[in-house]
Image (cartoon, rainbow, N blue to C red; front, side, top):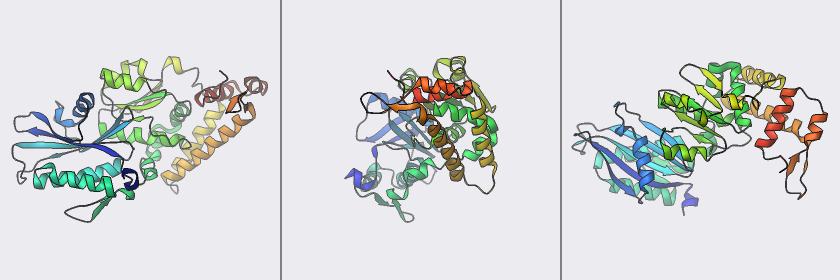
Length: 354
């Protein structure tokens, strides 16, 4: 049933902040674990000391995506003694636009009725049929929100206009499946930037590497460190002192990219990187080109790199996959930085002989 509807959400809950400033987990369907509940309370801005309201946040924890919409309760609402509330959804897929649209509908229902019953009906309708009717206007259709659209929603052009040629550091780190940590004090800036980065390696179409909203809490960091490579977003500058968490550190607020010393050897830049960097900048600065065309240009260049790797790979003994013939690579006498990059790329693609 769930597959037919195109709906991959598996949990819905409501968190309220009352007039005494207390934050309460008031309702959920179905039940959830204490660990996940604590994590979601941490992510929902109602527990924040600084009182800043974040209308929508999203992120990932152990392959579960969370989407949280928070609203202030107007005096006219039937919800008395409640100042703010958050609608929390968890799901198996990355699609911020889809879940933001749906949680906004649920928020309006909750403001109007003050009870989870109507929300529950809509949630079940989308779960089983992929559609629910909004009380104000039209319908919410799950299939209107294609995963590919979510992948293309960020702006590569914005990244290049901020970092220019240094964008190639990000491209290289992603190609080599390195650990990228992004810091900015504003969660909205962190999410917009981090969600776009996996598009630099479009051939993989892998957004599971994205952890757009991470706190420096032991359980979250443990989950993160189990991932071989990732893009992780933080709003706490303290993360800059946690060099065990990153190969590349992006201080978005200061427009600075730093490569951690242990990663410098694998990330040595050469003629090939300069070529890639120039292509990225040239494409992104072309006013005629859309973001998706820039992604396409970068993707074609990436395919070219894999074509360059092909002559140095051979079918492994068991015939299962291609592995790198390191001797053949060395014999080509490529520039050291290019040889180094291709070797580390083969390692990232699990093409090294065991």
